Image (cartoon, rainbow, N blue to C red; front, side, top):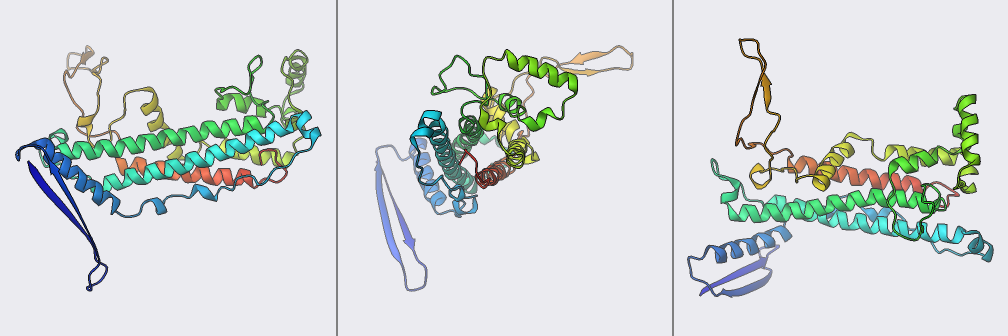
Length: 337
């Protein structure tokens, strides 16, 4: 049986400090690799908790103020405004809560990176069992944060949909209370139905649009039609700026790879799947006839992503989302509030 103890001393000055001691016994032979890995991982977790406070360095989602106390008249309930505003409130609540969760997960992932042991020169990363475990913990936290941030974009689209009376998407024949999948293209198309956009069309296109609107099953809600031009342009600015900065695009590339394909390699390519290249590499020898060579069994030696780089892109993306949501909240006389 292996007996081990760990003493933690919080000593802020020379006079001494608080002392904590943890004792543990493991029913295993002294040469057990599993017991040693368990102990090393426990120590690593303690170092992680004592690592630099990355949580406070991240953008604070609680700066997004939730809508205040809401009151409604019977006329608003009958007209449907009640449902628009209440559902918009719950969208705001879900957005802020999801960002808070993403913040905690990102901080955890960054702390794991801080304690990640180095790879021995010339050795495969997979040979270091503690490195494998810490890297897995790091990426599990980070990838879950990526999913949370992707969810924020979906909730943002749902916020626009609910705030505009469930009108910014073609969901005819479906119950808008049920979960629906909204896309940017759907919302963008419906936002173009604001009267200010008609003036930009040629006379022929305006006439064709009028003909289509006559036979259109889903009539546009008057809320968008009556929205003041300056308010409409501010909403459109937030919508158009959402995916634009380069770091958001970098983050989106990683998110799409993670969601729809094999997980992209980060830091250590040995831990990830790499498919064989069917197409091969074309070259033209001295004879002049083009040929294709296939490098069978070749493995990647450099990871596709560096963790600190993609982490910084994710942090800046979250900061960007928070800033745009704050801009949206600041628009006066908006049903989304």
